[in-house]
Length: 134
Image (cartoon, rainbow, N blue to C red):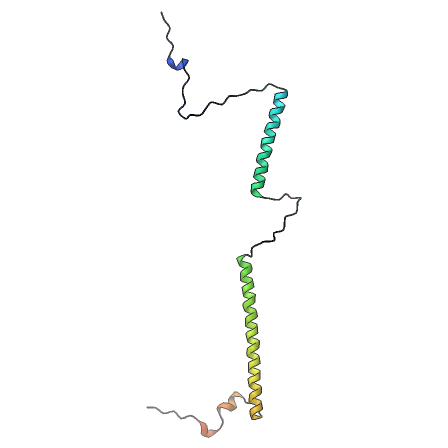
């Protein structure tokens, strides 16, 4: 009698992905365990530092660096434009008042008396406009 062994039990299965099998190293207690712990701590610290650098968040104890090249937000631009427009309106009002006063002074100088709106419209009974219907 011969004993036959199935082929799957004797040969290793091949992987279709092409990845190689990683070799596992088991450490004994003592010196190897300490080295492993320091190695793990160092890698975790590197991960933490890289995350902190990505987020650029300053620590609580350190002052924030001043930004010299800070961009003006749209709200600030809008406020600036509103103040500029308000200043222009005030300037134009002042100019209009000056022109009105100068015009009023020239009218007083020419006639000697100040003219009001009611006296200008009705200079006399004979100067009424006539309306004709066609």
